[in-house]
Every structure is written in structure tokens, then in C-alpha cells.
Image 1 (cartoon, rainbow, N blue to C red):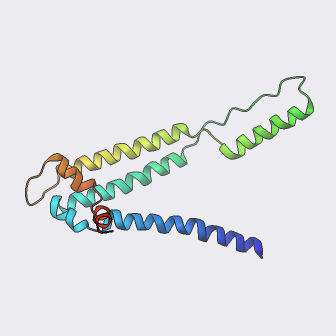
Image 2 (cartoon, rainbow, N blue to C red; image 1 turned 90 degrees about the vertical axis):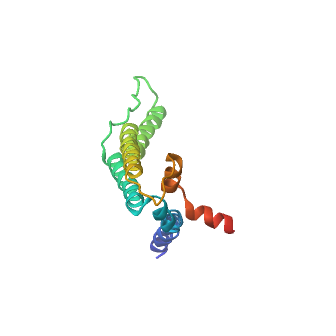
Image 3 (cartoon, rainbow, N blue to C red; image 1 turned 135 degrees about the vertical axis):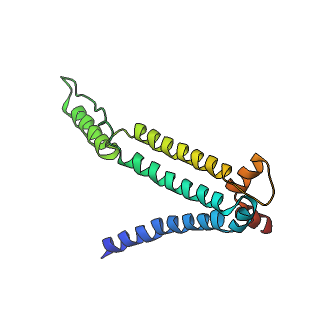
Length: 158
């Protein structure tokens, strides 16, 4: 009984709170005051940037998590090692294999590269396709596209 309660409690309290916090950040950062962004640089640019950001974030994450890595380098047990030391080395090797499994540094680098290249590409395309009612500078276009207008508005009201 207590094991099931602990499992449910762990997932509802820990992961549920992380999900709610993430959704609140999304709502305040990307949805609130989005009409102001549409007016400044156009709906197509804002949607292209937002969808490109999320798409390449997901693709980069999936690639980083799905790539196999090299198996970890385990310690060799030298000849003449006493039995207690052998047990410690075997336990460390087992823990290394269980916890880390494979070296994921290369996979993380490739996943981050996919995300950043895609993000920069979608940002550049959104800037080129931006059409506002009046011409604005490149920096103003970037702020209109990437700025957190809703967050700034809520911060000044508080």
C-alpha cells in the first residue's frame, strides 16, 4: 500500500509541478501579449520563429537521447590485488556501467548543434519574412521576435 502511495506521490508532486511550471512559463512568455508581436513584425514571422524553436529543440533532444555512445572505460583489476580491493573495483565498475551506461558527450554536442543551427536558421528566416506596418531596425525586429513582452508587462505591473 505505502509503496504505491509513494510512487504516485513522487510522480504527481515532482513531475506534475515541473510540468505546471513549464506550461506557466510557456503561457506567460510566448502566448501573453503575442498580438503585440504580430502587429510589429507580422504573424508569419512570429509563428515561424516559435514553431522553429520548439521543433528544433525537440529534434535536438531526441537525437541527443537516442544516439548510442561508447561503453565506459572500466578499471582493470591488477594481478595480486587483495580481495577487498577487487570487490571495491568491481562495485565501482558496476555502478559506472549502470548509472552512466555510455558516454553521451558526443550525442549531447550533436543534439545541441542541431538545436542551435535550427534555431538560428528559423530566426533568420523569420527576420527576412517580417512585415510590419512601419520599417524598424534589425535590433528592434529581433526584440519584437525574441523578447518576452508578456513577462516585461507583468513585471512592471507587479
